[in-house]
Image (cartoon, rainbow, N blue to C red; front, side, top):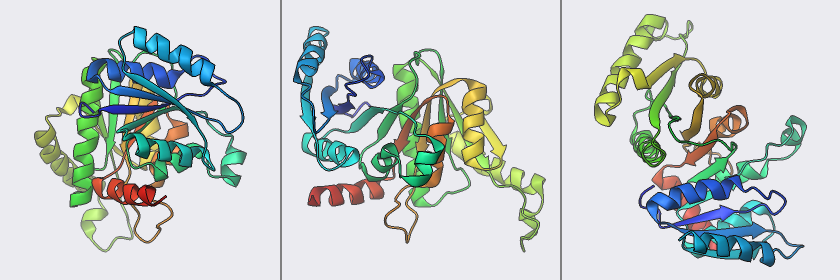
Length: 287
């Protein structure tokens, strides 16, 4: 996060108190990143509001530019501008859709998570991050190179946010329940699974310097356990990763991040492995 030189901040004209801008100022205040404010609207002119925001930010010592744009859809507009401006992070306020609408249409924020090549911070809360918990969600049981790289990225960003917000980093890893039908007896015994998982976790803890008090290993599905732990720890930010599902080129994101987005009471930072970022960058560059 320290390496991010430019942040794209999506401004919603109808929401005067921009939570996305509040988070962007916190991050840029520490990293000295440039802020590019974007309003996505094909109909109304918002130049007056943007110039007021820009003037206030310049007065506060921030480097800032503004833009109003529209290209077919919200997520395409954001990705186009992110590419054109070379922004390393997109920050947007998240407004949840109803369950019925989600069942009928893919929410715009899900599309943004699927198509944006860079990390996306979706802001859901107005509270301060200071002295709170930053919760990084990983899958210790997956130690293939793609997951290992993603774990590195998640923990690095978690530590970065914890450092700039003077918060504490906690890590959650969900492990599968015993499978009685499994041919391998080690997968039938809860104790054996947990012991194996603990073993993998010890290697992970040693590598990333995370003690037992800050590591939470729970049994069950991640999309249930992550919101539970966010609530229990009163986490301010959930850092979650997503790995490509091979064979489904249209869905480059694991469902967990999308399900968790509406279920957690925290801001959500979604990260992707380098290979997916590169692939999306290539697709975005063709437009």
